[in-house]
Image 1 (cartoon, helix red, strand yellow):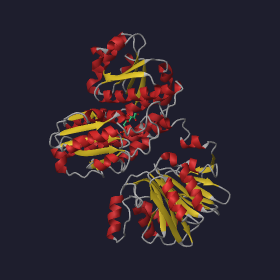
Image 2 (cartoon, protein in one colour):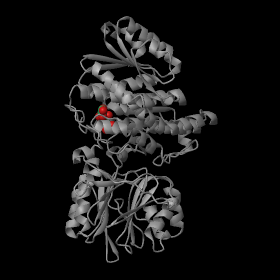
Image 3 (tube, helix red, strand yellow):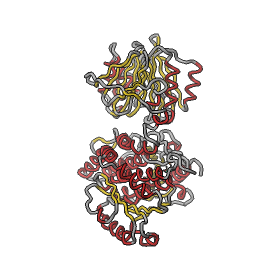
Image 4 (cartoon, helix red, strand yellow):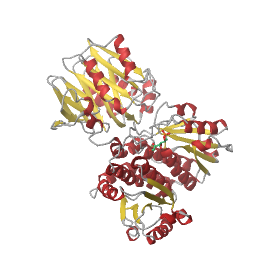
Length: 611
Ligand code: F6R
């Protein structure tokens, strides 16, 4: 979720770019930089940390010139350091680029460029692109960019300037957003509309596979193959705050709707057929085959993602797996067997309890794998291996997209371990890989479907908004999802809710089920489907009002429930990525119907860095 700002026109570029980067600040970043071209030279200033650090660097010597590009980085490859901050220049320093997204084949490209004698100054995937552009340049920047991006695969937005063409910015959009803004004799470019609103409301949103040649007079828009594109500008009437939320009323809703992209990004470059490439995992096949026990430790939503992981690792891999709350673990005296692997899961990578729990297991001899969303976070410093979740900055305190990204990271790990340990034969591995690849599209279709999952969730929320107690049930993976659905609801709606395994009801909680008590059931796991239906019949017999989350093709469920939130069919193993979505929406709409402050619920902080 990096930010990009660009300017070409008669005014000094530096202050305009800095103002734009400031507007993109809400997206979060760990470093920032700017490149300005003038008099045949590109001047670059960059700094790790907050924008203030870049402001200091600029105060010492502000690059002057009327064309430039700037960037705020949210690290994906390489820690947040001055060297890894964008813009990146080639060896001749005649070209500079900024880039959002991920270059999937950067490793092979880098090997190739190194073999050809190119020197790299950063650990980023981005830097390969600027070397490619420099290699391909023969007097036409747009042509060089076009040829360079042909060699790269991935999802990205790329913006380039050349010292020899100080009147042109070239931009390519491949999934990551780019918007162009038009002024009087000046043109702006940004990764998000908020950065443009101080200057213009006349904008054009680039589409995937397009290349824009941007000058002060306007743009030439083409497909990557050179076919001209003619698209209407649009007039933006949002204020800055609305624009930051992408037109959504709350960050939570925006982040729920970002999940198709998050799932896609989390898979990007990591699946090659059935091979799983995990760039931050350093162990070899011998370790994978030797694992005798998996520990999972985390808190809150991350723990709930770990509960799903436990089901998956045990069910699929037949490896004994223990999921323990980190705040419990840290004061226990765990028996850590040799050949154990610990997964410490944390969106922020800074949660004090998770750090302590993870360190304890590590000190006792377990190999430690961090699954986190923040590159270079504290957790990564203690860990032997890392899988970054690529959810981008999550602003809403109630976590949504980070949870689905944590699930995807664990699926990838399970697929890899399953094959190396010989428990997943090729046919089954292919099936899992194909189902994983299908997930981004399925999450997208779920969120966009005609009959409207969002509308359905809003309708049901209006019925739940005045309740006092709501129960979530499920079995196995569905229970894991129920725990997260319940947490989402309680933390933002302030309604009491509880999740329990469906079979546990009859051991006590059934006493609380009376006429109209809302019970939400997740029922996607074929092997326990009928068992969950029995629990439903028990609550129905006591008058409960039942909402189910079930597959589209489940024609039986409506006989036992009052309402059904439908999700697309997938492998039962992968259903949590889909079944959580209606529950996130339900929680959101209940809180909204109750008129509550959704993005910042009372008493809660985004990361709990104290005990
Ligand atoms: C709930 C939520 C929290 C966090 C928990 C752990 O929506 O966000 O329960 O999941 O505080 O935070 P991280 O994942 O940063 O360790």
